[in-house]
Length: 383
Image 1 (cartoon, helix red, strand yellow):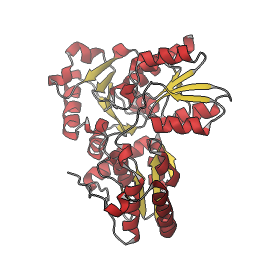
Image 2 (tube, rainbow, N blue to C red):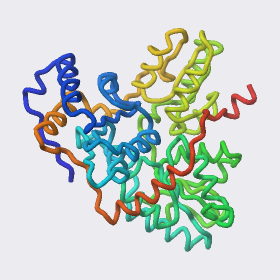
Image 3 (tube, rainbow, N blue to C red):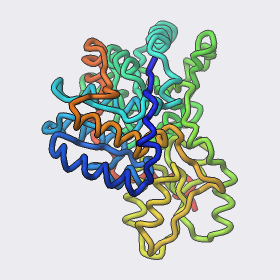
Image 4 (tube, one colour):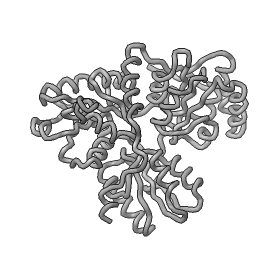
């Protein structure tokens, strides 16, 4: 059980400006020994002091390539820091400023349950069931994935990883008869449909139900078995939000994250990862209008960055990741102060046997390139 030490009052009493100034001074003091990685969903204050900002794929690549840094401070959530710990060197320490910054989606897939599901599904179907596990998962689940011949993916390269999994072994693929997509059912379903499959080719596997809640007919027809998991941030977005924003802003382009429910994605113009969403808005014309269905910190930054175009959140209410918000300047400064004093706090470690297998799944992910552009939806093609 992870335990987060309470912050001393001296950190809690500092205002944002003083915190940012002290973080900057500690960064200068630690120099190249320090690398701060910040996810797009972090607050503006954290993004401003991060050395690199990106999505899960980009930050995984940076963690693997940051050879000079002795300390990698990951301003994200626990599974991201775990991945960084797996990919970094033995002489590097990965620190998470707040150990309570978890991920409810990652917690929806337990390694023992995943292992049992793979064995059961292979046995019942008589086919090779290859897991494709979203990077939003624990290192233990990633390790199970590798042992079963699968790979990790991010929302940037999930389609390419699915295609790899289904490709014949003789053609460099995994030779899957079926893909088990873990742990986000929406990412799996939306990607399958984008590849030309139908929702009927997908079946949801519920680990809390006997046999996953799947009948023999369900298992027979499905090419994609979808773990029953989701991201609460992206469940905020509903089909009525798309209709409302189109009525209020005629001509607006709607782009959403593929973790959104399928009904929302199908009504949007495109879906994409955070990097793909940023690229779509950046490449769009001056004066363009965008409604974006993803975490509010990113959407708000896009609106400020591209002042020559209209950018708003898709929903009527903000959609913030409360877990990301647990990493703040006060916790970051505490970690940097500790490092400067020779103490490594909140270090994220992974057992060697789990790390070795998890790295295989992550390396397979990194070897399979991302899709550069957001994916147009059927609604966009027929509008």
